[in-house]
Length: 453
Image 1 (cartoon, rainbow, N blue to C red):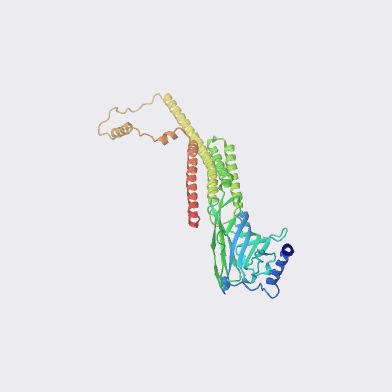
Image 2 (image 1 turned 30 degrees about the vertical axis):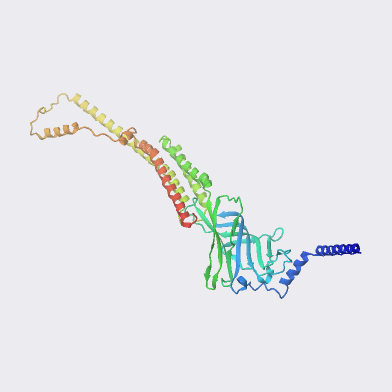
């Protein structure tokens, strides 16, 4: 009898366990999700036009926390003053009307793909030029509703944003490009945007840009007041540093080489007119083409850029080398004219001497008045002769080193070439010293003013 009761007790317990397992196996949690969604979002139960309550169900403003994940930065255009970025944008807020039973922790969250089913913040990007969502293969967007009523909205978007640039230090500049987000219709009495605590902005690792480097970024608030009220606003300032190595190879070194090539004209013979003219004109045209190509890749601004100073001075040096040859050519012709005049004068003097000697030879009967060999002390002519002797007896002055060195070159044209060989490189080296010290110092100064140090 005891054994039979024991057997039936085991059988009953086994049946209960089997029934419980069968019931658990038959539970369809997707069906539960549907029922929960119908329960909280059914007709007449939830109105997406009404904003959520404030913190702890108060009548204060709804708090929306924002965070971003920067996937890529495609282009930064100097001409249009804009940049393109692709990012994952996330918003999170609490709507107590969306609370539901999580079935003992088995429903972690509900997922929606239709944003119009729930209330959404009316956020917009205030400095946006163009933008689009990503719909391949399906729309890259989701909404997660958690049991406590917390809502997470995530979407992948691509934006082209305005980025006003100051190009005074170009290409030694740093640019700050902002991403601004604000509420369009809800004032701060109804809606407030806050950055998510911890790490509100993430940037993909190994972000590569062709001509810039993303040095750092800074999150801040930018609330704006208008005639219709005060609106909540968030911003991210991205600090981009321009890669100077590209411009050093493509602009600065070629310009230096053109300037140095123009100095070859100083070492050519002043009689080699075709060689010196062709060299000067070629370097001048090449430098002008280089300058126009640089300006074509930049917007027409009203101020002078660092690259304008560099190309302008280099163009001036090349043009100065061409003008130097014109001056040398003029001095050479002047020297030739003076030499011809001296030669003619010597010929005339020689001809007059020859004529005088002929007259002396032919007029043998002529008599000459003999002047006394000794003059009296009070004779003015004797005093004058004495002064002349004193002047000639004075020791000669020592010539300076420059005059001694220049005296080795008898013609003015040769002296101009020799002086140019020294003057042009020295002045260009002095310009480089002033240019780099000025603009590199200003770059560091601007960085300190911007507050990124």
